Image (cartoon, rainbow, N blue to C red; front, side, top):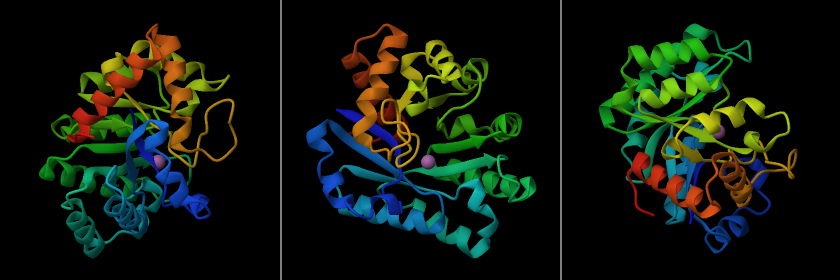
Length: 256
Ligand code: NI
């Protein structure tokens, strides 16, 4: 069974057929999935999905692009959600400099607060980092993020940086980009990183792999990603599925 480590089924892109789709996961070999919060609202809906389906788990966190909306009272609420028995990680949190807002100082503040929360709760972090390679790495190193552990989701930097994160105890999230014709950098990352440090993810509804690029993504596309990793690593498809599933169980500390 495949372990989907990162999806957003609370997204309105799934309003039409969410229940049918989620009900079909296990018969399509998707054994377990983590629905990842990106705001206070989606943290709540992620937990609701986790309560509804035994094989869905949740991550609680506020994405850097949403971080300007945070205040102390909301942070307290978020911390309380993290204690829920089906919340397996704090995320997605990090830095996103692709957009001009929020100000980097605001993003950094709430990134660090949520990172420290994860460490206090002994839960791993799910990191979102876009056009912010140096600051993300520096913050994770300075705050001893290795104590929490986690995954650099939708990894988009160099193979060299991926290996630095592996050395820090992190996993590398690999999704649809590895199948793109212009995804050369991501292919190099997959070749360099040990399979024991790779997690399968889709980031559904975004980043659909080839040949479905541009369409709505779902976890049912995970075999396309696993197959590409198998080719790049010289492993069988079954080996990739089995090892990445074990990796996800180890990181999130759940058996499913
Ligand atoms: Ni995401």
